[in-house]
Image (tube, rainbow, N blue to C red; front, side):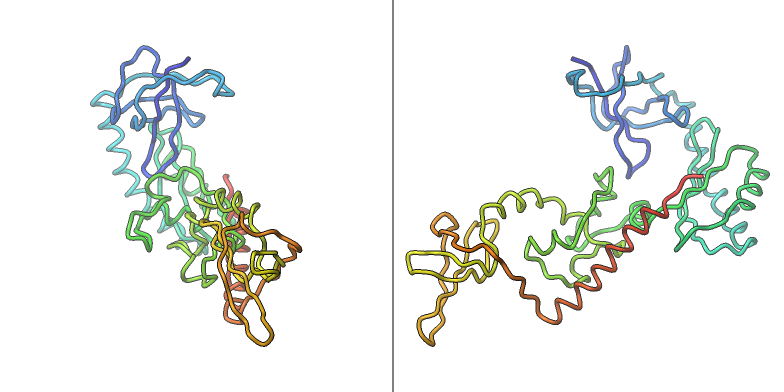
Length: 304
């Protein structure tokens, strides 16, 4: 077994695990750790606990020390420098007439590097901008193009549920979300109802998808021919979470419907058919465009 602690460098942000070593650190303590980008100051968000060493593919780095008042002061000074650097960079962007939007500036704790995050519709040639910024700040400069999801994550806000956005509160990474998930969860395909503040498909569509995937394996498709105690009928709709199906029957010219638990029917022919009304079809085209934009966002993310 191995002792670990969870450290977050910025909120919102991903939680990274470290070995506390000889230090007795508690939640909300500030610590100095070694990362791939040099020394960083972070906050302990997961207190010390034991986990099997087999859970980790690579050895954990030990924390360097518990942050001193001087370290905290230095970090606060860096936050003030970021505000100044933001204004300077915006002026330089205007100077070079670059079609990009600066979203955030980040000073590394040891001042070895300054990161400038921006959004843009395509690739930007910012080589001259980098040279100019390096001449001003006398340190290594890094520009990172991010997607609209990352931009909203850094800005913050509330979702349609009234709570703080998931990406701003607890999500460490963005997972792939697709129209298929909305369809399988019987959610309206209206983009305004299933898009987040970033204009992309809502991350929460992913949360229950595993449950839907598991249940749909046991349910017939809409349009499937099934055998019931009333005789043969066609599946008209399904309630996935309840595992019930509504079956359509025809008795001469009369059509009627009846609901059954999924385990009370027998599937004769499971060839489903999707019935999408014209309005839903238009919405689906818009959503397909959103999916293309999400892929474009990932393709445009680069680190120079």
